Image (tube, rainbow, N blue to C red):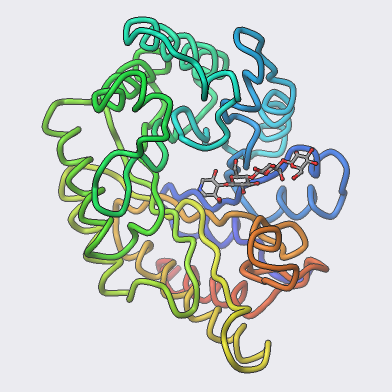
Length: 331
Ligand code: G3I
């Protein structure tokens, strides 16, 4: 690792603003030296994996806990890293009290205003991008009924959330972020319709996050990803790949063969992003197989990231470097 050019230095050679990043766990930044050193060396942007979510910041109604988020907001700039805020409105990580709350629409709107004011206000001017709304729709385009904001406010909670965030932190770029909407067709079409509507209504949305939680056998082609990015940017929006990981454990072949295919998938996605002038960032959901949500969800030996459990580079890491080198202007 030591002899390899860090990803952030390869990105600096692109001569364009570009976020290369990962989600992080502040507790590991504090407790595990290899983890913290790798984040600081490799990336220019971090996303808090959980620490800005509602269930973590307001576990009891009216009582806020910003300790972990504050720690990241101190650590990141001290290591020259930008922070991507994640996430203001989501149907997961909702505190129990909010899941059972019954209140009027007016009271729910006031609560949304307090929530956004508390978080986006606390970090005003220090967050580059907010995932204002995360995963608001189902596969068929219907709204997620289990979102408290959907339940208590209705469809227009999205418009309101973007307006409130913009009023609170006018310099942050505001994103809609979703999964399984990376290529064309299906949910991607629904996300396109949703954000096109926001743009048409003059809602302050600036970008769309394509999460890219994918697998070797469940992923968009380069052409599909490029086409989706092209139609979203044609609306005047930026795009980012925001949470990439590539599952391999269920596939046939040796680990070596699977990691070789995984490398191609990472390289192709980064190539498409770098080829699109308004794709302004490429972030993964973790970076080492030692600490990945995938192992908890899909099995201990799932290995969807680009450093192994000892922080050694996998083929995917070298493939990302290849894509960055290819995109860098000749000197
Ligand atoms: O911190 C507690 C720990 O004290 C406890 O012992 C343990 C018992 O299970 O749980 C720990 O909290 C878990 C937390 O992750 C930290 O590991 C929560 O139960 C678990 O629900 C939480 O899951 C997170 C999930 O979002 C829900 O918030 C994952 O880490 C996180 O990777 C995942 O991230 C989402 C993005 O925000 C949105 N896109 C999809 C992505 C993957 O699902």
